Length: 320
Image (cartoon, one colour):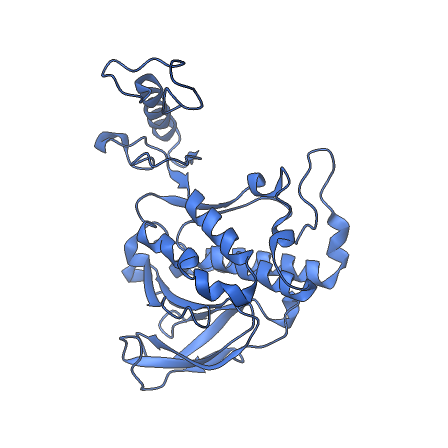
């Protein structure tokens, strides 16, 4: 709608009154639509699936935006799925695919979409895209879901992804619910449910989803081990901070030091490798005490065990 020449060849479209390709009438329609919707229903949510570089899609109309509440982050979807579809041994050479998003993460109010578009037209299912043997494919899927839940931005997950649908989606048949009889599929579903509950209950994971103050890198440079770590924060008066550490290789990382901003006992509130989810049970026994060793520009640090193809989330002492 935004461009008069979209999917049109030369000579098949007419420029606007200023000689440009922007569809001024469509732009006005979208702005008025969002003004009317939010004016009448303040709790409503409008979301734009927009894949061009059109600016301020999710900014208010009075500052020149289109007025949508959120915009799909197509770049995150593409880069993350491309990265996770690679064999783990090759991920170290493509580390930027999983870290680049932070450059633009707060340019819009983004939604992280794993939509129906990604599981149709020969693309296969989310589980089917994951490399490795059966255990590794499920571990990668849980890692994907955990990484999405912990990353800044709202979440969109198409049905079937939460329990590891094996085949790509078809409107001609129902989902393969019988797969929940399998421990690995049932474990993935429990993980998705627990992530949703955690996302709602921990302010650091949601209250500043679209604000730079809600995200801070701890380490984005460990391409050699395919590990990244970051902090998520809530509003200042919420006192909520979590550390997120993701290991994108099937090798456990023991004694992995990460800097944290406060001393005390950091509680492990999520671990994608827990046995309940079909994982191997590698983790941090529920909590880790800080050491007075400065690391990553912070005065204290945690010595962690990072599970294979896993993600862990630890809540700060103040949050608890």
